[in-house]
Each structure stands twice: as structure tokens, then as C-alpha cells.
Image (cartoon, rainbow, N blue to C red; front, side, top):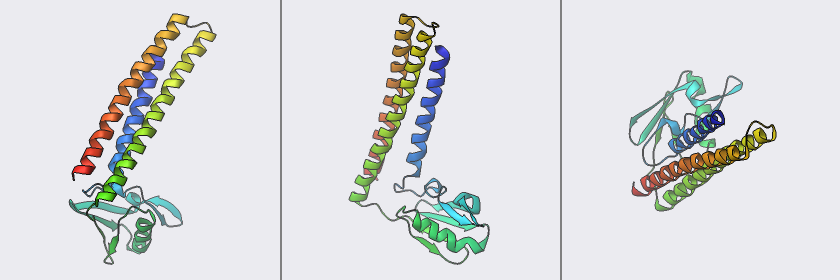
Length: 184
């Protein structure tokens, strides 16, 4: 069963990495290209991510710049950023798009905390699903005669310990991100 636990741990680490990625996309005071790099732009007859059609940079903590590789796409990029509903307003000067980060209001901060908690709960659900897969795998091994009742119980205990460890990590990330948002 140790192989299954190793696979489970790997899947749980992926859940944690996904949560961190989701947190990096949140606009919380500082400009970050991660907030807009996954915006989908209609370019050349297909949907492409913003980072595939433009250079993204943060000249300072409150500004993002988007410089398209092909200047003819600038209007489409501007529309895509607005359509992404990120609360950002692009400023088009013909060659470059600037995005100034508006200051966060108290209500907006509370909305972010709700979003953070939602992402945290989604991560916890994913972790519990991995645990369930591990337990089901152990039970299937018992059915096949590869594992004893004690082996199944040990596997369940290991899966629960692993899940508890990762849930604590998720709770720490959610708490830290929530404090960061409220203290900006």
C-alpha cells in the first residue's frame, strides 16, 4: 500500500500547488502578471492566453503593462481583459496597454476573503477525494486477497494522517492569505 500512499501524497501536493496558483491570481494590492496571464484572447481565429500573444510586465507595484507582439491585436486584448471581469480597467495608448491597480475598499477585501475561503474549501474537498481513493484502493486490495483487515486499517490510518497534514497546510495558507488581504 506504500505505493498508493506515495501516489496519494503526490496528488495532495498537486492540490496544494493548485491552491497556491489560485491565490496568486487574486488581485490583492500589488500588481502581478499572474492575475491576467490566463485571460483568453481571440487571436488569429482561435482562443489564446494573453501570455501567448503579448509581453506582460509590472513596471511598479501598482501597474501592469501588456505589449502585444502584433499591434493589430491590441483592441482584442483590451476587450478580453474587460470581459474577464477582473475589476481591472485597461488603458490603451495604441502600442501598449496599461492597467493601474485601484486601491482595495473594505467591501472588496471582504469579497476576496470569501473567495480565498472558497478556494480553501475546494482544496479540502479535493484532499478528501484523494483520501477516499486511497481507502477504496486498500479495500479493493483486500477484496483481491492482497491485503489483510489489519493492512486495510493501517492504510486508512495512513491516508487519514496524510489528509490531516495537508488540510492543516491548506488552513495555514488560507489564514495567511486572508490576513494579507485584510492588512493591505
